[in-house]
Length: 208
Image (cartoon, rainbow, N blue to C red; front, top):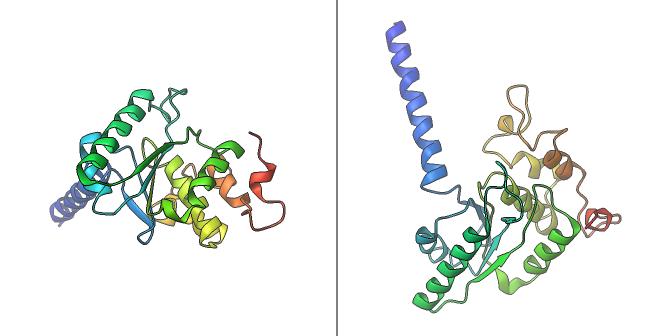
């Protein structure tokens, strides 16, 4: 009996590991945020971009990599941005498309300046469908995707925060506390966020 349980547990772990590997290194954490309108991902290798952009009719790629910061959370650099820009140029040339590549260098927590640039893109209906990405696809791309839901789809703050991970238990629970948990920078930002349509909106309160 114990042997069978052990085998079943091993199989479950192997399956879970395979799914996580596929999502991170094959799918690059690509996810639909709003049907046919907004997607988010990690940094997709230049040679793989075409297979994500063209089938989803992406018109704008928002790249949140901050080349001026180099640490574990922000390993992206200028070369990543330049490589992506060149890859999109080649895709446009090949397919006759006009995909825009926009770098909005952002830290883990948005500022007034980064949100202003983000809204400038997202307020333009011609920009859609949009792909939002950072380096890992688990931090900046996720918080800006949540902000999109709050600003443009009228989501409640807690609902948007709970969608920052695959399951609410992986956001903020006794089992696990992510960077979107209450008391963490990104978590508190979403808890306290006030959309532009309301008085005392967050954008007006932020520093540059």
